[in-house]
Length: 461
Image 1 (cartoon, helix red, strand yellow):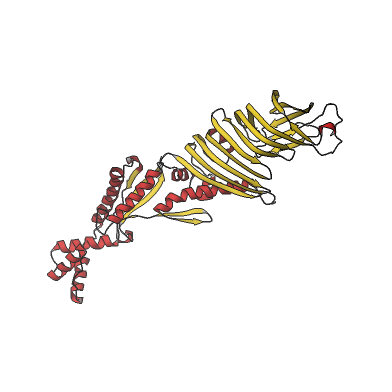
Image 2 (cartoon, rainbow, N blue to C red):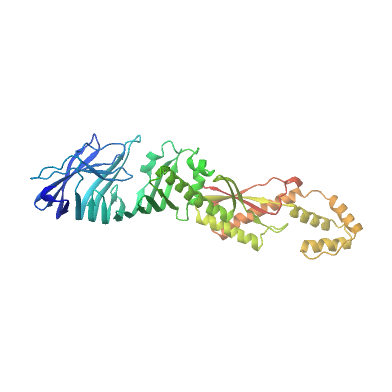
């Protein structure tokens, strides 16, 4: 390498500016000049934001950086006053004590999509210390900019044998990502933004990524249809979003993933997709598990069994257990404003027994021992014993009474109305989020195991 030696220590670096913008290749070419020991090292950077494109041909280039976004940097070195190195000779180690970039811009364009996806990182500022190449090492890295000149993005950390980077973005608009939803979902993103923090650790070939993502005010447009959430989880995307949104309308997801990059079976797309599905499944199941049981088969929701609000037999008002259940339902709905609830009054065998006891007592044909027995049973007190003859007489009396279908129907209607009123008046839920089904008049075959009010949640229209 002549007088330049095996290592170049750069004393001063300055940005000469953007030399050219080749629109046909969609590349920005930036020239840098490094002064060191009186000699000049010319560094030419070819930057492309398109993973589908190759860099311009640069003789004896060393690819220093190629990240998952397709950003590539090539260098071409020539030394004045010295013979160029022999073909195939190893590149010299270049060390830069401090590298600063201010006010730069990077354009990203994915031409693999139709129409192409495009975004820009403006006002880029970067400071890197103890930078080495071609074996890339950065002792300290800090960078920041504005995505589309609006959303702050920052990256800091180290690069080397153990790379550790922390990236954060705030209020990044979601509608531009619609290009990646084409064909994968019947919906498009009409509104919303994403904020998040990503911690990336790469040691040798072991990759570990921990993402904390918050989607704010996410809105969809389009006709309902088959989507990847329904295929993977068994419920429509709209219901999944309603279950995931909190009282602010935000969706918070933890998306960890990782693996060994050297393994032939490793696929970044696969592990990322699995991480997303797992995070969405956990966020969806959390409110459902608070209301009842969710039956899964191969990771898909097969059935949702929400616990009914219990009522005492024959009662039109819930007891303490029932009121606690109403409060639990109200809490879930209050935490997920895009959910609505549908109520359905239930009557069971215990209700029918109580109504028939009341009718038998009111008929006035029972003897005093039978009347005492019925009064005690209706009051919930220990009933006096009956002999076989008295029990047969009571069974005959009850058998002669008509089926209390109308009374059971009214009881079911009243129970649904009472729970709806409690949710709206006591727990301050919007009346538009609470509906009550009108039950059919029940026959003996339509009685449920226990009295109560059934609960069904769905996405609010």
